[in-house]
Length: 215
Image (cartoon, rainbow, N blue to C red; front, side, top):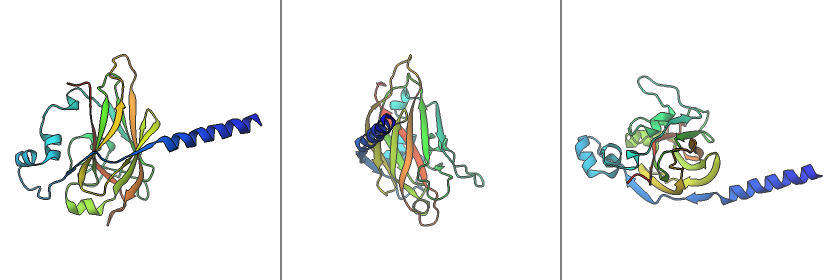
């Protein structure tokens, strides 16, 4: 009887924890340019996404460091392209992570490993889908919901719009910024998708961060 009571208590606690996971909508959204044939210098000057990725301005990454990015699966390489998890954090919008599981990748995930001394994270930025151009963006599946885990504990669900944009989410203050602290992780699990018109593969072009403790 005691074992049954204990099991019911564990299930109830898990259900309560699940119910407490907050859903977050983007606080800021930046559109990808329709015309990408301009020079990189002009695109940086005209567009917030290109300025963020390629402008070289001081940011959280002046002190922020990622040890490793791992993916639960990745699409097999094709010709000169690969789709590994690290592509989601290489600051190149044309290289992407594409999950490699059957179907549309529900349950597949990325895990980011941070050193304990890393500045704390407050914002998650997602360039959703294969944003290289409007055609491939429509053809491949995009993420609709991402569940965020901080050190394996679920803390939020990111509700992404189905748009060829950079979407920014305020997730609270995560991390330690302590040289004596151990490594910590953020995991992003695909919960739901917007289906592509041609391919089932779900794609994230970039997933990176902003935060505090740098300036």
